[in-house]
Amino acid sequence: MIETDVVIVGAGPCGLFQVFELGLLDLRAHVVDALAVPGGQCAELYPDKPIYDIPGFPTVGAQELVDRLLQQIKPFAPTFHLGQQVQELARQEDGRFRVATAAGTVLLARAVIIAGGVGAFQPVLLRLDGVEKYDDRQLFYRVREPARHHGRNVVVLGGGDSALDWALQMVGKAASVTLIHRSAAFKAAPASVSRFRQLVDEGKARLLLGSVLGYEERDGRLTALQVTGIDQSKSTVEVDDVLAFYGLSPKLGPIAEWGLNLNKNQIEVDTEKFQTSTPGIYAVGDINYYPGKKKLILSGFHEAALAAFAIKHQLFPNEKVYLQYTTTSPAVHKKLGVPD
Image (cartoon, rainbow, N blue to C red):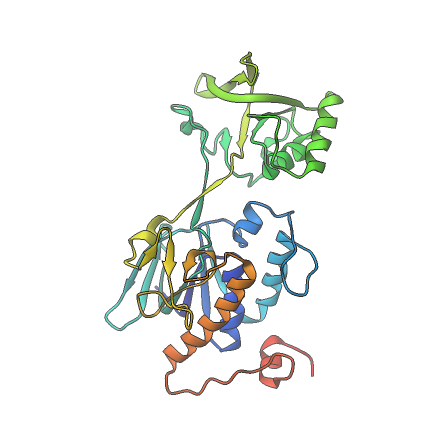
């Protein structure tokens, strides 16, 4: 069992900034996230998309924002538990919280902050009877080892940024690349769509507009996908690997079972501490609800700051907590490693 001051559930921008605000107050944090990398939606859904409403940045890429936040919290050395969904959250007799993940990690924290965005993201699955037996063998919802697909017949499913990005990445490396999308309207960056169409015109890739409605297999291997085009034409595409990028679906998941007051799929909090209906459990970012709530990253940053001060007071009720300005405080500069 790992003991810490605070467990943060969620490693999106608000969860990452929460580490910073806690660190300024000398509070240690462990961060748990169901995704394999930190960054939440910014890293998983739209890493290349520009964001225009982060103060001080006329424009900043979503992944760039995540990278800068990770750099900002380095002085506080948080521990990340990635690719792990929190399954259990229970108060112990001594007032601390036992936080257990599906991977078997168990943490004991004096406070918990839920920064889970709109919930844990799960990939939208390819809905064909029995095809799940090929998961992580020939059917992939995330690309963890790009080289394993080189030299193979790759079919990419979807029309968003992830689908186009990986289709473009595989051209020239895979034996063949076919992109299948249900319509001519893409949700990816126009430049990516234009580049892929150019590759199709050059005969370096193939584009099919339609839906995958069946598959073929032989000797325990997936061999082909059956596609019905938007014009109702039928075709069969030989395949070694399928990369399915139909998007990610947010699920509140086990959070719904933790006994917290909910407003639809959001956790109710107060606007002084951003504490939930359970003392010691807080919620910041898109997952919380209060009158006037706006689902903006900058709003989550504000919530993280106030939650940190509330937790400091909760854990050290007899200690005076001073607001220290990062521009002038020698104590803060020492924590951040700012040169004298």
